[in-house]
Image (cartoon, rainbow, N blue to C red; front, side, top):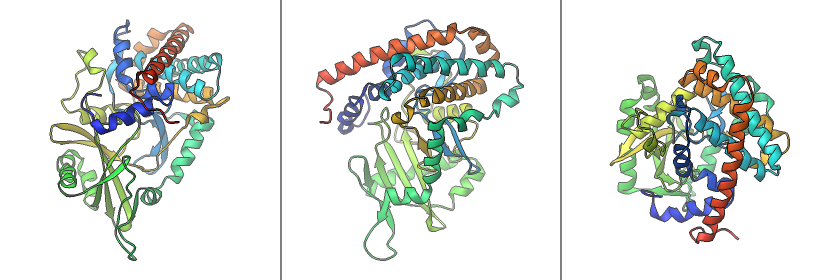
Length: 394
């Protein structure tokens, strides 16, 4: 919790106390410390760092097409490839339990995830690297949770975001719009605080590619807000700017999200990280994704580092209840293939495939770790609830 907004720490504990999976989402530093104590392969690639079932989702590519991919990179860093797989396996066990699966079923899903990862990595080892770099995951449309996320993303237009996040400033016809407050989740900023956030657009513009900078110049900022996002990020400083382009029907929302150092960095002495953590996240995202946000960049406010990206542009994610029945395994296979693509783009598929081999021992071992870590997470969650730090909802 060090460095976070003090008034939001209680909310973070409350969200973590809702379920073992909620606790898991909020405790990447705990898992990073645990993984660092264990032997590792030493085979590095770009890690998502927080690979779990809800950190994949649908979003709009630069050409407007909807894609489904890993979409959270706050913890991204170069590190042992199996760390992402271990975290994903544990998340599949915890999410599976929450969705009503018995441990045997959830464990089979974790095995299927790693087996799909291994099969795809072996395929990458036989392909030209340029083909690996642009590989498209075709099984995405076959998994119902992914199909549902894409459907939600299709509905989540910028006009939908405009109605959800903003309101007319007054009852007067044609009144300008502004952020719709929902304290403490969304709070409008004015005066010096708003001006400070808007000033961060200067360094951001300087790092953008010329064509992106040209596009941004068509938009003018209208309003600024502080927004609480996610679970692991609660307590970090997160701002939103509402822009208008060609009139009120042309909105743009940019998120300026605080990025402290990756919690893995302390355990990776040769990670070769950029000095700016917003840059670390943006570059890690570009390394793993085939299609990235055209407005992705970084800036600073005071001594703090920030990532800049679009907010609510055709985004859709899965819910835990979407993973009931056969959906868990189907989705697990998509998770495995997407992780393999991200690792294959940023690492050496031949080395990873060679380490994994052709047998099922690697998948069994990762799944066993996932069950053990899920069990430990439940114990830690119960300890949090009994500590008095989290006021759970009645």
